[in-house]
Length: 170
Length: 329
Image 1: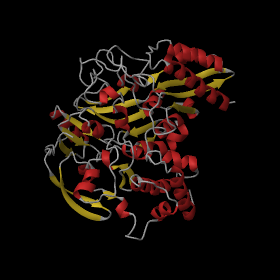
Image 2: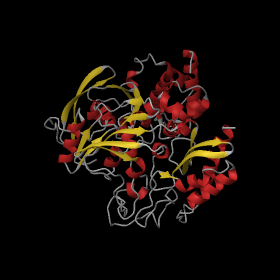
Image 3: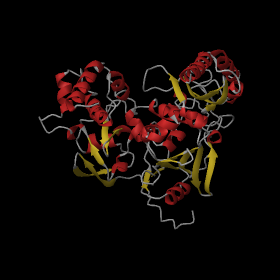
Image 4: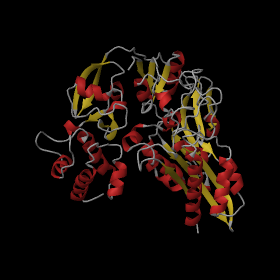
């Protein structure tokens, strides 16, 4: 200790304007500190691709990337993302021009109801980047944070394998 | 979720001073436990001080063979650090067997040590719970306690400590470095975690506003061949019913060095010292392992729904040590 302690930059519980970079675009919004990144995306920015399954960090349906790493938007406070890059499922493809993982999920019928799919895909693309998709056991382990109540797991793994093999690596 | 204030700070002194000034203030790192419990009204802070911009995310190999893990290093980064996997495989394995990839990307190592119990009666924010509401009673003791502790319990609380990484860190004699109003200090990790006793609301030897800055792991040569075995209801993404961090060195047929700690069965990450004493100098055989496990678990206080954990822990200890002994031949 012993250094000069600046006046603590405390802000109250009320709404404040923050700027988030979402899918490469700067977006301003007014939120209270208690607003999750998931609610900020869905309710404030109209980006409803990220889904609210459990809202307690158990299901993975809200998986997005913050600064390129997959995280759970339901356990992330929006105010903490000021100055960070947020990527959602809407930022993956370009309209009808799908990301290869999205196309592989379609081709392999890797969903039934589809509710967990955006989170599955955000996790799956991150998984290949992380390099933990050598075989089905490793894919299952590293995708275990994304639950699918329809149990489309075999087809999800098939989609991931296809994109992995097309990219020529694990 | 109740409203709370927010402050994002860039240096430790400001963070500490800010929390100190607010009796209802708390640090916010990865938030994986904290945000969840605030949303469920189990925690009711009036101010969260965001420490994620503090320069505490480094992971350093020490020249003496030790390791310094910054408090804000993420579980995923520590697990993947080369020095960790090579020299402390039990720690890398414990980290990778915990939570999910997303949570490991978020959760900080300091926060991992501060994570709260998974007891359903603690987390429902309504049941009697001496940890959440001191003096209100413990609903788990006569309730659904299949996942609860058999070691280190009291008549006030039987909740299991949920961390995997902390079990390995206890086996490795890690030190927790903190900084607070009284300056910096180092706390032996076994002293950092408190038994519930009569004060189950006090889980850690931290003062209000005291910040974990790093976890220091000393050089532990025996840990180069070590393992973390985790037994649970699902193959992945589940807390332990019983887990074992183990390292063993056998020389001339006798156990020359051993480290053993248990998770999933105790109210704090449990260093199995009675078992270690029983093993040292003796043969590395399954019978000796079972004998040592029995000595450790003699102190267990099983209850109707968790009595199976005594046998499960015994077998998990034998399995972990046997795997290491066979691997070393």
